Length: 250
Image 1 (spheres, rainbow, N blue to C red):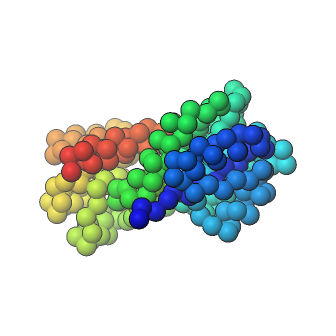
Image 2: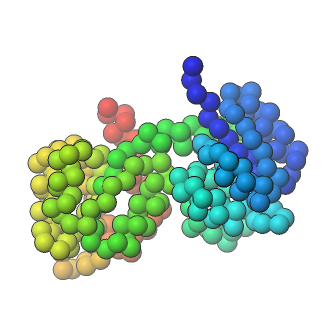
Image 3: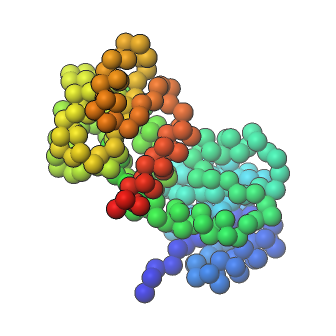
């Protein structure tokens, strides 16, 4: 029997909670509701959910703060914010705190279901390797990709990355061009030799200094390169596009 996806709806609008719950249950989902942020946090402590739909503007505790606290409890939580208002600052804050997406009221039920199924698929998503000697970059990239449902491994040096790929193939690899011993190009070429199917995204904070290395990486079929500081929206879009293409090809 196919396992039901579990959904938490958080909104002080009781009518909306009832309507959305009714529709999603009819679609076969297991639904729990919470009237405000503190109650939602208690529900999340009790059980993980495949998707959390949360209103941004609520009394007691707004959706952004609730989202932040939930992700602290369960870093893998997938939170979609709901709003009927033009609250660009709150939307930006919610995404910064790790919200998965935004959906606007009145809710498009088909869109809501699409988000649920998309998040469920991502839980069996790509394996991504981040290779960078900067712990901050590794942590930021890893956290964002994990929240989107991808599995992420980290290597701080080229040799470490090569050893990891020998043990377990990855689908996508982010490689910094300036690494402590062997550089990003050498790391990429070694990984490509082990697994030609791995898609490589080269990254650097040094535009001119590594231009020739970047050109060589692209000549040897690296997918693209990105400059630091990384635009995380661009990163996620790129990863999604690559993974969808790989899924179709597979």
